[in-house]
Each structure stands twice: as structure tokens, then as C-alpha cells.
Image 1 (cartoon, rainbow, N blue to C red):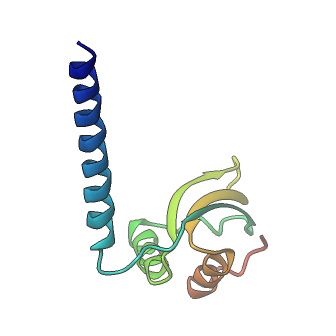
Image 2: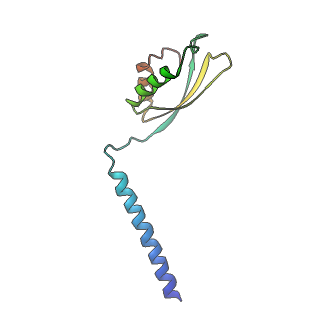
Length: 110
């Protein structure tokens, strides 16, 4: 009975090792290694009415610009009068988030 348990454990360990190794080699086959991602919370203050004209096309342009720097917008929160936002981004560095803001012509404080 002990031999059967040991054989079963050995099979389980071997299968786990094989899946781990296969996963590592699959991940390594990516064309470009992904930089480690960090999350950033950005607070911005806008003049009254500045966010009123932001439509889907403007958001898409910002997202397209962000992609060039590996910056991803996750979500945003705004106060009731839309003069302050809190946005969550995933990016490799703080500099990438700041560069994306410059690329998108964000001149507001943060």
C-alpha cells in the first residue's frame, strides 16, 4: 500500500513539474518580454467644464497614445462637479505615466 501511495505522489509531483516547466517555456516564447507592471493612482484638478467635451473618440485617442508607452488606463473616479479626477493606471514606471500625460496634453495639476 505504501508503494502505491509513493508512486501516486511521484506521478503527481512529476505532472506538476511538467506543467510548471511547460508554462514557463510558453511564457518565454512571447515576442517581447513584458516589463513588470505597477499600478498608479493619479489625482488631477481640472478647470470647471474641462471634462464636458470628452467623448468616446477622445478617450480612444488617449488609450492609443498610452499603448505606445505600455500604459493602461483601468478606471477613473470624478467628483460631482467634474473638477477633480482620480485615475488608476497600470504602467512599467511612473515616468511612463507622466510621459503619457504629456503625450495626451494633460496640463492639469497632479
